[in-house]
Length: 490
Image (cartoon, rainbow, N blue to C red; front, side, top):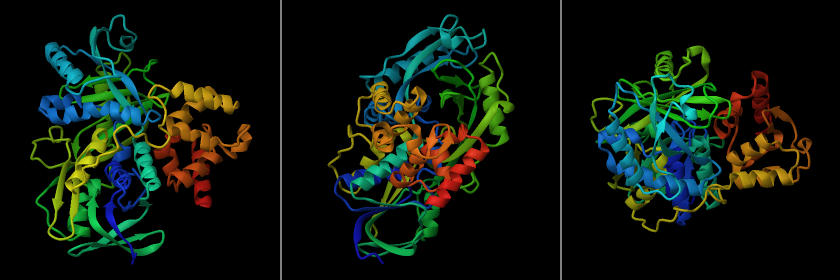
């Protein structure tokens, strides 16, 4: 057994768990986090990759959630300019669906609920002359343009974990909590990981198990809970690039849902998401053919050139652990978080729901629930994010000045992955050969080493589909070479 009793033991290495770990460690608390797989391996790497208020949530009267999320956009944008950036979304007006006045009213509220300093306001578009109208069917002549933000979701999680560890936290990946014994003043937590079986002690146990939260409560901890969870699957497809501009679309459907079509990784388009109740094992989340076809069909209602299943190059799905508020459909279920504190003995804090955009506020609320009020994370950059929100081009130029062998695209990728930490990754390299083996797609041995040593990467999948999305660019032999290197060198 660990002789030290830490203040917090956190179960789950998704965005909520890592966000709480960072927040708590920054307050001077001792923290241990255990994640049974890789960081962001499940829901947190399967999002639509947006910081957004949730325009459609206004229809469900979730004004507090939307306000909270809208306020967070610029806070997060300034804290992580390397992995997030503004985007101008285009909403084509569909005459057969929501009336124009209702959309305009919703967008007016969206502009004013949260306040804006960086992001520009909504404006009307004439799609007959605007560049975004060229790929749409001729029937779409009017549209609206508004602001939201992109985020590299899995990197957000990893960087919170990195910062938590820099502030004193212990991050244990591939370490499963298999049991816990509750005492009056502390928990004894049994784990199994790379070092075998271990027991840790903590004053407070935080269950941020995401889709597994109920399994942790009733199975791992052997407790009863009055709070329920609703597992909702959100699926996405990635296709070849469908348009030659950098603006995403938000598209309405006849079933009162919306789907995004977003420029992705330069040469692709990300389309999603669905809302389907998920009754299976949360670890088995797959985008079904039915969901993929639904997404293709919806986008094809708008684009002049239809999107087919043959256009899909990758698909993924995540299971959202929503608080069960009794909503009649998955689409209507609340996206807000619920924090449930049980103090029958040593405290247990269960984290239900939440979304990427409000993860930092959730962490503050979790600490507040435990009696801590000295909030500190607003405006404090994540590792690599210590530059201006619009300073990416200047940082890329400085990288190319210091390392002349970098192409413009290579430097841009490094900036939007590592920010100022790219200087550490490239340290001492005078030409590309100094970075070691070239795996393709500008991925080098030096980058694999950095990801292993600094960002908890252990497998090729960790590197290719979470720390980066280079799996889209590498062929099967190149991906196998990355996996082989990680296996041999970790």
